[in-house]
Amino acid sequence: MGPLQVIYGGKAHPKDEGGKDLIRSIYRAAEELTDDVRVTYLEEYDMILGKLMCAGVDLWLNTPQKPHEASGTSGMKAAMNGVPSLSVLDGWWIEGHVEGVTGWSIGESWEKESNPEGESTSLYDKLEYVILPMFYGRPTAYAKVMQSAITLNGSFFNAQRMMTQYMMNAYPTPSRIIG
Ligand SMILES: *Cc1c(COP(=O)(O)O)cnc(C)c1O
Image (tube, rainbow, N blue to C red):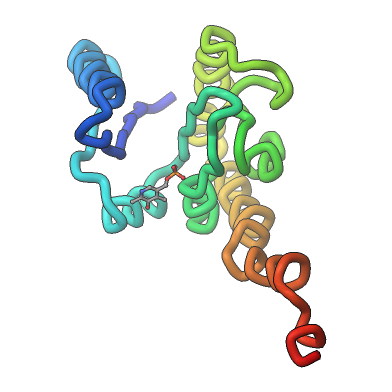
């Protein structure tokens, strides 16, 4: 198999001490791992960096604790760019996930409570036994997953579909506006 690099992005609110501590612990872990896995933390995450990351990585990793993922828009942005997700089954991924087709789940069920130990085992197992062997050994199969992220996820999880649904289901119909 080939090498693995982890790229983090995102920032904590200046008053969010817990969030800042979390970022510090990622920096410490990255230093400890230097010789084994390259871990990079991109500072000053913003729309421009977000655009580069969503379009430029090979896999989108999302590890919320269920059920706290508000939505997971960044995974949708990645899917539109042909980037499959490896994510806990929470937020949009409950609907967008088709195992091995649009990406991969961390853990097997959205219904169970978050179980960080089980989820980290699942994350490492999927990377080691499923995703990396496919990425390096069967690039055409991986490209097919990338395509399906666009065709199945990108075609549905977009603002056009959302606005149409708002128009059809939430806003008054044109006939009611006209009277
Ligand atoms: C998409 C985006 C977010 C939201 O990311 P989530 O993973 O959905 O929380 C936040 N900040 C920037 C700059 C973004 O582009």
